[in-house]
Each structure stands twice: as structure tokens, then as C-alpha cells.
Image: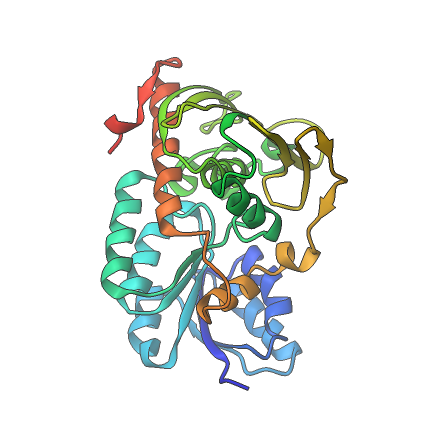
Length: 338
């Protein structure tokens, strides 16, 4: 068996702790170091490792110090911090020549996306964005079949996502714009936008968007109408307030098929040439442990569809949505975004 991947964590919060409980039992990885401004979060991660009979990772309150001191003892870094921190930390990991597994959304702007792509090109490292959808076998199969022309030409897309997000995260960093980079559309809605960005196989051309903040400093609901360069039309609806729970439903209309799928790639239904299929369900392991996909990609066993390049398409869309919403739905041309 090959040596385990020596992994560091930047951001040892609740998401990292949730994953660590299963990751620490994987023989394919070894937790080497962890950086977080919270001592309690670092201690929790150390306790998780200890409970599994593993050595606690080296402990740092500054990710820069961790990268400087541990660079030669690492192979890859998982970044799980508030969204606005992603760009700086992902760049630092990439410039250190380490492979990167970065929580969604990739970055908060086109400028940051371009900087990360440039750094990745120079370092030639592996960079995977932890979007469950792009790493889902059902989404990947849909992408390949659509790209091969099996479904015919894309006509339009209708995508919706909803969650009792406003109440659930009241007072949380996700509702502080200086940390989050956006509201519900940029947080949970990022899964919807990213999966659509991948599946449409086209750049966006124009976007018109409306948001309602419901007296909060970030968007709670968002409605978007867009046109792709290939001529297809796309609508997004993100509803961040409502009953408990979270779900999504996306329908892609093609000239030969209708594909219904959720943002995370957990299920799919296909109508092809007038014949319907039963609902397909993805294996839970693909959704609950995306690190396995990262490791397969790193070994060259799986194509990486969750790329920094798709992250740039996502960033262009998000910048256009923000600009349009700030001007009461005025249509924004993506080429003006950069």
C-alpha cells in the first residue's frame, strides 16, 4: 500500500470536525497539522484524532506559520474557513506547491478566481473544489452524456433551492458580509449555481437578478434570469427562509431529453426520447465523504470536474448577479465582468 497522504487543515470549525470523524479512520491519509484562530476548534480536532488512536496534528493559530514550518512534511491541505478567507489561503497553499482541497464556494470574486488559476498554472498542483455536485457520479455522468450530444441541444434550465437558512444561521458568520461574501444565494445556493455552471457546457452571456434581504445585511432570497452563449435560457430561484429543511430541484430541458437532478447530485431522473427512467440515487459515500473523490483525482483515477476553471465561470456569474441586483435587475453583460 502506498504511503498515506500527509494532510493539513486550515479552518478546524464544525464542517472540518464533521469530516474529520470519518477521515481520521481512513488509512489513505494522515493528519499532520491544523491551523485555526480558535484554540477550542484546534483542540476539538486533536481530540477527534486521539479518540481514533491517532497522533494529534501539530497545532497553529496562523496558517502562514503552519505552511512555513510544515511545508516539507505535507502533501495536501484542506481549507474550510469563512468564504472571504478562501482566496488568500488557497493562494498560499498553491504557492507552497501543495495540493489543494478547497471548500465551496471557491472564492468571492472574478479577480480572486483569476489569481488562483494563475497560481495553480505556475505550481501545476492538484486543486479540487469541494462541491458535492461536481464530485457526484450522477452529475458527472450527466455532464459527459450532455457533452457527447446524447440529449441534443440544451434549450433551457430551471433551478430552485430552498432552506430555512435565515433563521437557522441568524447571527452566524454566514450572515456577516465581510466574512461570507454573500447571503443564501452564495452559501447554499452556491451548490445550485456551480452544478448548473458545469452542466450547461457554456459560458453565461447576460444576467438579470433581484434580491431581497429581509432587513438583513445579506440576501435571503434571489431570483435570476440569464442567457447562455449557446442561446439557452436559465432561471435560478433561491429561497433562504421557510420551514426547516433544505432541498433543491433542477430541470434541464434538451431537444431530446429532460433531466431532473438536485444540486448535490444526490438523485436524478431522465426522460429520453419520450421514455422516462426511474429515480436514480447516488451512494451516500459520495456525498458524505468528498475527500475520497479528491484522493482518486490526485491518484489520476478520476477526472476532476470540480476545477478552478469552473470556479471562474461561477465567479463571473456571481459578480454579474450582485451587479444586476444592486441596480434593480438591470441586465449585465458577462463580458463586462472580466
